[in-house]
Image (tube, rainbow, N blue to C red; front, side, top):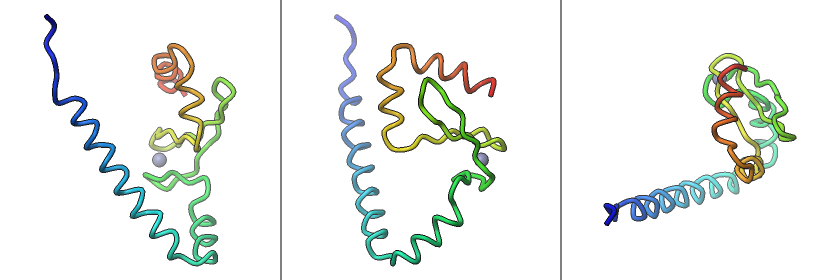
Length: 102
Ligand SMILES: [Zn+2]
């Protein structure tokens, strides 16, 4: 019999809970902001790296546009792009090889 890991699904559950809590907090925050404040934030942050603040560059990978930071090599995916990529076979390995060299 193979060893069972009872904690892995539990961990996943709590991780999801945590994400859900954060998502709610952030969407409440967004609701409280005026559209002028939102525009201002967008102008400040659009195409800037969320980690180091440098400009992002757009790279096309398997028909999906991915934003990459030239300074810290962080990779940013827009809504739905992770789903598009994760549907592709062998994606993680080839993506890793791809971004390693960019
Ligand atoms: Zn960066």
